[in-house]
Length: 265
Image 1 (spheres, rainbow, N blue to C red):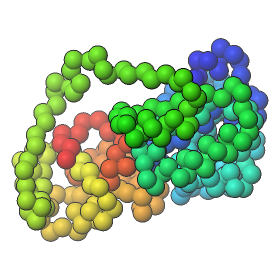
Image 2 (cartoon, helix red, strand yellow):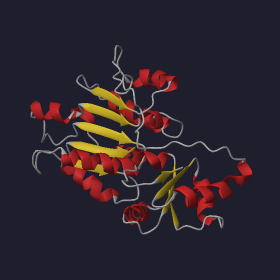
Image 3 (cartoon, rainbow, N blue to C red):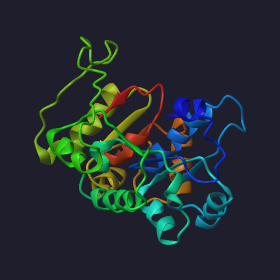
Image 4 (cartoon, one colour):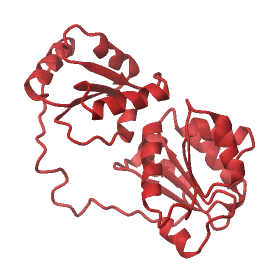
């Protein structure tokens, strides 16, 4: 996308040329950082990240001043659409990152609303792209709605012989449901000598781990009910090894980029 727009010298039209949707704030921030790193120089193009928990007025000011690429979460993108802050008439790329999550329950309706608004602009040169580590059949069937007929699929892993790193050990532990907290506490002691991340399905499960008396290690949680600034502080503290166990919901896992983690549960 960046290479194509760079080759065509498309920057600086005042209207967004590319929209990238992500399921979490953390992933949106990570994508924006990668886009900044791809610049040939600081002024080559503008990137704006939009997500909840931050000032919508400042984002509105930047959009009206002119943005080349915007990256955002669905909820905040829809907020801007309702305020009339987006001009999609120059849009060339619409991208869904982590498409299996974006088309899942809870996100699908928002994605449909955004894509329907874009389609109503009748853009002849619009290219829709979807990226995902997993593409089950239900994602393929829903994707037909958003992608043009005759669209292609690129699989970057089907020919790889080693699909997991040789330096990572995979363990499956059979545990009765009622004993899982005790088992997790033992696992963190036996295998979590350094930094550990525990993923849960729900925010309630994450909070239950935080409050559990069985887990003796320093633990902090991260999920959608926690304010954005606190989530950023928690991630920073974890990377700086101020505490040893981070608990996050599954959706949040799509946006985490943390090196030197010893254990993932």
